[in-house]
Length: 344
Image (cartoon, rainbow, N blue to C red; front, side, top):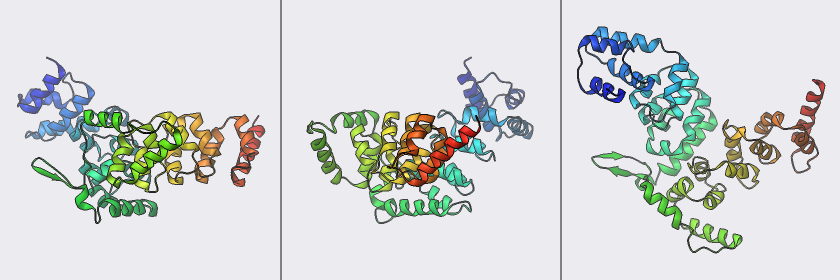
């Protein structure tokens, strides 16, 4: 019997107690993900012996075991909810980064997680719009910084103030307040194919035409375009004065590494966007992103100082002589070179 069918027997039927005990001990031949789902299910078993054994088996799992499946977008929502109570920072980070994690679970975590994990929560703007109770949770968190609370106020003012009705989407049989509508995939793809049709081929005229089109859009439409639009539109929206629109560009599933490299070099975008790029472990794996950020005078100094030691010697030398960057950056480059030479 395939594993999925085996799991289905436990979830939809009531096998004999001895079989449920085997499942509670983790001895049923299932994948780790399905075993976790089964154990969480058996925590609610009517037999104390079964539920107690399931709890004991779950307690015996290492953080590494748990991380292996809570990172997966296919992870069961009940499993994510159960392990959200784990105090491990790495497990909580993986759960918060997982798009499958229930909004109510994130809202509860928002009340108690560390400052760094609050940044992870605030980074997912789409989830915040779907579940505004997360914002309420952040405001109750004693670890929330002034910057975090400022972002919460900005989001509430922009989306949940006088514009509440504009962001209300009612689903069949229930209300989902303030959530963004999600177009079917085929409609989204068609939108991208047609969105720039008929525009001039001259780059300057083309950008002006796109700007005119964007000027007629609502904030909500711009956010949807930032997520699912074209490369050209993202290149313009990343410079938008509205911080939420610019940040949403960085969440686009279509965003390429080359685009991030170009954003890192831009001097006409918000320093907050440069900061978000600079704190991303994924994007700063690319040397060109690091180099562009360090050479960009708009990059926050703390980000520049943190990334500078990762520059190659020849680039440090050029940076130490670059009059286009602040003097503190040039002096920092000289200091890093001296430290390297002293350790040779």
